[in-house]
Image (cartoon, rainbow over all chains, first blue to last red; front, side, top):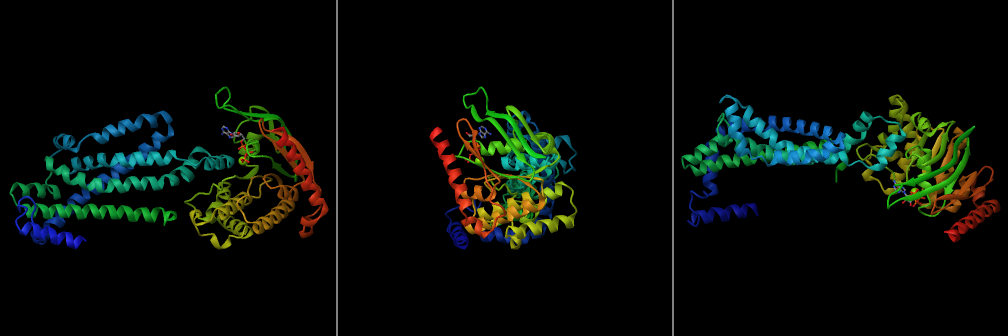
Length: 239
Length: 257
Ligand SMILES: Nc1ncnc2c1ncn2[C@@H]1O[C@H](COP(=O)(O)OP(=O)(O)OP(=O)(O)O)[C@@H](O)[C@H]1O
Ligand SMILES: [Mg+2]
């Protein structure tokens, strides 16, 4: 089906039904992809590093914040709308401000943008997981006279793990999108985003699309890595 | 020595609210050390609540609960009892073996001791081959058996069991009944055992406590003396006499309710 779709796309563009500057033919995009493979690799690596650093940072913060929020009922209730507001903060609004706050050679603004985008899904899912404790587990641990930290370590954290990974899976794709898009708004121009804007500005549309494909592949790699990590860390959930 | 003593115990859930429930009222019960006591009665008569009071998992609204000569709270903190709930309550993220090891782990037993004890208990409940499985891969009855193994693993002086054999087939059930009696006799364990099965209560117990609902209370305590149990016991006249007596007592609660 994928092949058929590609063939149809190629035909429609070649037949002149869609102007090439709107959507180039797949063959043209592939040609550009192959020609620019080294640049795509290099810029992809830069964007990938930004996405990874931001993802790890945002996820660690999200998990820690969820652990704190779950300790106190009221804080937990209050924190969701705050986190939601943070989530609604558009990267578009944030990126230029952050870019101005740091030197133009700094990778930090893009990583902060990624971390902020990642924070919300990880925080919300982890909090949900930490709160969802089987009452029988609670009673059992009480019968063992287990203290607060023992309970957290042996029951709440492992019980929340599947939820954490649901959040991480959502966050993994978002991280790549954020890392790429953040570059549209200035700052250091060494990632995939900068190449997409510059190619588009030069009306080199097949080339721009080639970098978009590169970004897609990067997003896929992140998603699959998150999925693999989830499988490894939660072996009891094998179908 | 008395293992458990309840004096004038009552329990009201959500007092003063629209959903107030008088779960138990005026409960006096003594379990002597090494005794096997069954609780039987219609659904909702407060059997699980009574067990939770002994375990100090819910506080009584009135009266006192004494376990091993101490207040129930102290007994819980000293881990004087092992408990198996109506729900298996296994940890999905631990293998069967590590589920059984958990109470030993919390008592700081050595690794080799944990291994050995868990193995022994799993063999006892017939799940030796499933040690490395995860609970979601097991049937409901198998999960319940793991929970039993977990409760037995620490050899607690007091065993609290809430319908532990409810989900088991008849053959496994009878085998585990005999194993349970053997363990209790060997280790001198005192047991409070909740069940819906009259023959099971009679076969296992030194005393059968009959309860009735609304409000939950003890209506009868029937002493059973079957001597040492064996295959013949299940066919004996004493056994059937006990069953008849408990059944009659339960009828009484039905009429009253
Ligand atoms: N945590 C609770 N909050 C409010 N009401 C409760 C709670 N636990 C038990 N009850 C009520 O107390 C009564 C006794 O419940 P309990 O679980 O002890 O009954 P049971 O004899 O164990 O019944 P079953 O045989 O169905 O397990 C019921 O009416 C129940 O609704
Ligand atoms: Mg019950």
